[in-house]
Structures are given as C-alpha cells and as structure tokens.
Image (cartoon, rainbow, N blue to C red; front, top):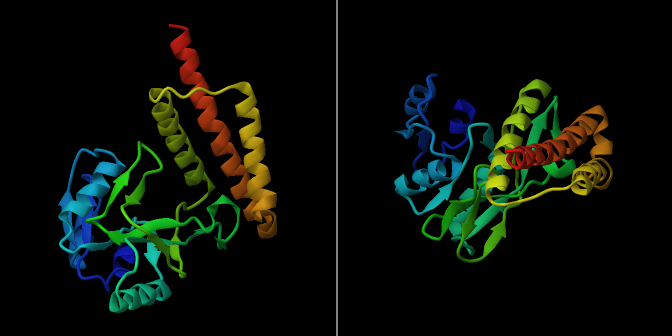
Length: 237
C-alpha cells in the first residue's frame, strides 16, 4: 500500500477506506497525509468504493487499489488532462500486471481496461460480490499510459484468490437464478484456454504465459463447478 499512496502524491487529496484492518494500514496511510475512513465490518466492494466517492472533496476522482501503482507516464498524462480540461465524463486506463517476474502484456489480463478516472457527480461503482465496475453518465475516453498492477505474490496466492472469487461468483450467480450445464462446463474452459494461450498471445510469454492461461482456464471451470454444486445441493434437499 505505501507504494500505491506514493504514486498518488500528485493528487489534491487521498482518501483511504479501511474495513477494520489489524495491520498498520491506517497508520501508514495517515503518515503520508491520507484521510482515513474506517467502515467495518466489510460491507462489500461496491459499498466501500462508493463511500470513498461520497467522502471525496473534489469532483474528479482517480480510484486505486492497494496493489496498483500510477506510473510517472500516467501521472503526467492525467496532469495534462487537468490543464486542458477533460472532454469526457470518465476515462479508461490500460492496466498491466506484474506476475512471476515479468509484465503480462498478453492473455485476458491485457490491456485490462479499467474505468478509474471520472467525475464522481456522473459516476458510481456498481456490481455484485465480484467484478464491480464504474458506470458513468456521459462519454468515456481512454488514456494511453498504463496503470501497474501486482495482483499475486506467487502461484499459491493466485490459487487461493481463485478459490475465494469463484466461491463468491457461484453464490452471486446462484442467487440470481443462473444455471449451467455439462456442455458449458466443458466448452467454456476449453474456449478460455484457446483464447488466452493462442488468440491473446500467452504462447509468447513462455512458461509464465502458460501458467496464466492455465489458471485463467481453471478459474472458468471452478466457478461453473461451484455453481453446479450449489444447484445439486438445492435439488437434493
């Protein structure tokens, strides 16, 4: 987190929303001048993110997670936009992930466009338990320079996060009435691997590209398998 906050030093204010962490998150954030808001217990990603929007004192916001960094090039592009005035209600930013010792500019992970810079009067976070995103009223532009992302320390953490997120996804989709089938459970992962490894260039990244493609495929299968499990549990009651 300190690196993320340091990369935001050019902003007029920094607002950190904490969910009651027991480490030094709040202390470290306050040390660099951030305004810390504690909102616990954790109410969900969408609620937490929108709380940050509501507490901001400026109309234009740049939303960042603790594992992300604004590059100097992206900072300069945003600063230039501030001087000329934004032409859109929001801007998508290409995000590049650093994983297993290299930047991943291939597979479904890239360019991973994220709508993170926007007028909070015209935008809100929306979504369910996973895969939340910003929706704005008005046109959306695209910035050229990248937002850096360091999502996982290693493969073990990656797999733990897959387990967490696929469980949340299955619960969310089950409650929404979604169904799956053997055909989808076989076809969707097969298509995911073909798309990631061949069509989107995972092959070019050697063993790292294979790992990312395989785990993206596993994510696709696991979320459907967990949904099927919930459906079977309900049917057997």
